[in-house]
Image 1 (cartoon, helix red, strand yellow):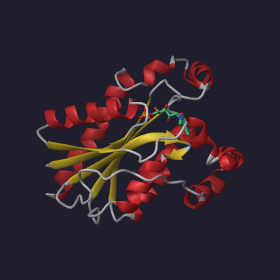
Image 2 (cartoon, helix red, strand yellow):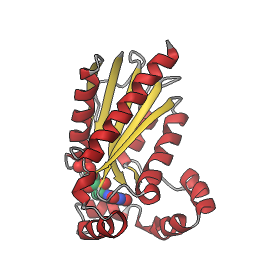
Image 3 (cartoon, protein in one colour):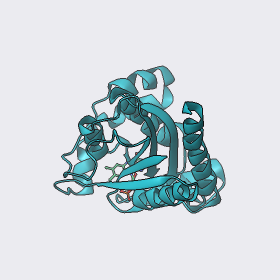
Image 4 (cartoon, protein in one colour):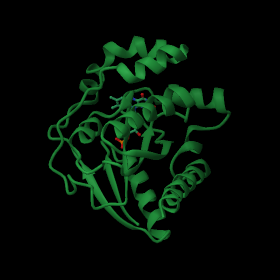
Amino acid sequence: MKILIACYSRTGFTEILADRIAEALIARGHMVKRDRIDVVNRKSCWHLLFRQIYQYPLVGLALINSSFRHWWLKNYHQPEEEICPHDYPDVSGFDHVCIGGPKWAYTSYPIARYFKQINGLGNKPVSAFATFGGPPLNVFELELIFTPVTLQIQKSGGKPVSTLGVSSNYHELPLIWIFRLVSWILFRRPLNSFTVDSDYGKQNLKAFCDKIDGSVKSVS
Ligand SMILES: Cc1cc2nc3c(=O)[nH]c(=O)nc-3n(C[C@H](O)[C@H](O)[C@H](O)COP(=O)(O)O)c2cc1C
């Protein structure tokens, strides 16, 4: 199967996850091409934060009320950022497309723009991957990134197949100590036990690739 891995990474962690996905898919006999998404103007992390900080009280409400969360994740304002021309603006020649980026509260702004610009996703199996600073909290991390991304895949005409989210154990803003504390309190494990090369990361990478393989078998 011919697979495209398209990735935006600001500080390099999602790029490493994209490398591991590529290695695993190549080892399974797939032909893999990479597409690097980059921004036209790199902004400071504070600038990125302030673009959506006004929404954070509603993120808080979404965390504690699931009905509101379901509505909010379909209706929040998703910021976007201009991206540079990249190698594969039309993905119709691929059998499967994997799209990844960091979690910036929800979808990162360059990936949101990528979904708007990409051609050829119609009826295509699409998988999504992400890194985030914290441990893999079901709601705050996984649901807040993969519910919007899944909707963005569907809006672009694609068919969502698989998701993979791991911690980078890194945050540009001075917040990582909070995530490390949360990891110990809620999981009784250090935050680095949820990164890409941890057992958690390897198991989830395998499950992610199994689903991609499964999507081919169900088509053929
Ligand atoms: C504006 C902004 C918002 C972020 N929001 C979150 C968040 O909601 N949850 C989280 O765990 N990490 C958050 N992070 C941290 C990144 O998701 C994390 O560092 C990621 O692994 C970076 O990936 P990269 O190296 O590929 O850019 C945020 C970072 C930035 C700059």
